[in-house]
Every structure is written in structure tokens, then in C-alpha cells.
Image (cartoon, rainbow, N blue to C red; front, side, top):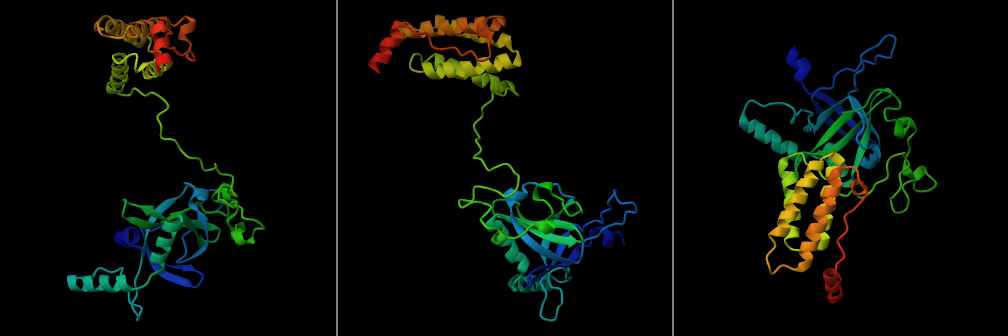
Length: 316
């Protein structure tokens, strides 16, 4: 009895116009009880599920759902016998049944491929004022599954879409609500923007991250004056992060490192390198005090203008 109630698949018929397909859902959908009702009665989904429309994934986004289920087609032979849902005892029978099932045309397979290619979801009527959606979910780069998500019972499960019964096809509109270049949406959702994956903030969750940033500054310091712009860019990035975290001791420590690098410069080093290192170290020491104008977060350490730097710029 427990196996039949909890682990048996849910069989249903999926319809879309004249297209029909037998299907099964795993795990079996549980009855839903609405607490707001005076005399709550468990609601169960119908065994005949109608697709009432299609909508773009971007419009439906990631909606709140009650449960998610894997949808598999059931292949039936000409006599109406089930070929795909049973578990034959003999291996040869199982192989032959799978081969026959794979050759039978299925609306579920067609729907799955169409939703995946078009980037859309199918809105399904589960019962009176109860909706769900069918969509393609990727398991890996090469494998995907047809999934069913159940919304909260009610005529308006997703507020930004309005009442489901009042949604209509695009062709009924006087003009395309998505615009000629498909850049708009008829629903109040955030417009699509090109997301940047550049790391705009400095994060030191692990000591290795801080060590890497300090070593990057020291590497650029040894290549002055060729790397002047890069050196100050990395220095200001570390300075702002240290001020934001209240890590003032870091600024003094980096300043001491720059002073040490200045004393270790070889005789063949460019004269401008010593000036830039001393200038940067002095600026960091002023910022580490925490009470001067140089400790302001918006302040940036600019390269020191020297006769050597101006002459090199003229040569460039």
C-alpha cells in the first residue's frame, strides 16, 4: 500500500489542441490543501492536462512553485497496451519493448524539443483555477529532461502575469507587445541587460587572495616606471578595500614593503622608480592614520610627477 501511494507514477494524458500524449510524472503529485478555505478540501490534479498557452522563459523567470516533477512519455502499441511504463521480467522483453517505444512518435518528445529550442514554457491547466508549467531542464551539457512545476492553486498564481484566464495570443494584440526587435516585454519584469562577470569588488575570504593582491603590487613595483599606471591601479584597489574593511594595519604594512623595495633597488634602476615607491609609501602611511584627508575612501593616489616621468612621457 505504501509503495502504491508514495512511489507509483502518476499517469495522465497531455493535450494540446489535437495533439495527445500519454505521460507519467515522478514523483507522484501530492494533494494540496488551501488553508484559507473555511472547509479545506484536498485538491488533486486532473488526469487530463490541457496546455492552454506558451510563454517566454524570461517572462516567467523563476516563479514560486509547490513541487517539481519529471515527465516521461508512455508508449502504447496499436492494441493500447503499455510499453514504456512497466518493468518486464525478462531482459529480452525489456529490450524489445524499449526499441518499440523509441520508434513510436510521441507528442511529449516533440514538445520537449520545441520548448528547449524556442526558450519557452508551456502553461498547463491542472484543474479548476490551478495551473502549472512544462519546461526543459538541462541535467548536463548533452542531456535535458521535460519537467512539470505546479503553481499555487488560484486564478493568479504569478502576480506579474495577472489572471491566467485573461492571457491571450500575441496575434490578438494591435501591435507586437515585445517590440519589433524583441527588446520589450508586456509584463512588469526587469528588462534584459547584458551582465558583466568582471569582479568589481575585492574579496579576501581566504589569506591567499590578500597575498595575491600584495604580490601583484610588488611585482609591478619592481618594473617601475614601465608599469606605473598598473602599479597605482592595483595600489588604489587594495587601498580602498583596506579602508572599507577598516584594515588600516594592512596599509602600513604595504607601505613598509614599498620602503624596503626602494632600498633594494639596484644601481641600474631608473631614478623615477625610487621617487614613485617613496611617494606611494608615504601616501599609504597617511591613509593608515585614519584621520587625514588622505584617508578618504574617494581619494586616489596619483603618480608623482617628476622630471624623469615627464621626460619619459615626452619620449613616448
